[in-house]
Length: 107
Image (cartoon, rainbow, N blue to C red; front, side, top):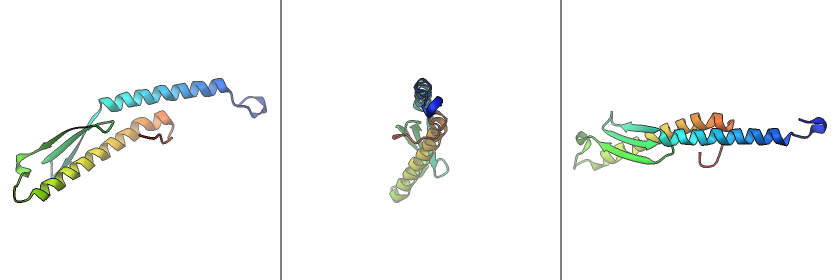
């Protein structure tokens, strides 16, 4: 603070610029990251990027039973939820330091 309680605008701008660079770096790291979610002991695997883009779904043939499609559906959904949770945790890890704990829309 300057005399009279006025904030130093140059310092504020430097901090904002640094934060912007850290956010950009974190976003780049998230875009490169691939996380997996699994269910059924690995019978279903879902791969997602750190930005939440789903890349693939792998289903072990042992999980396919024409008489029990519901179980396979549940396994796929569980793997998606598992991957989404891993993506959320990585986002918090990467973006938290960059934003100083602020919650940014979309992250």
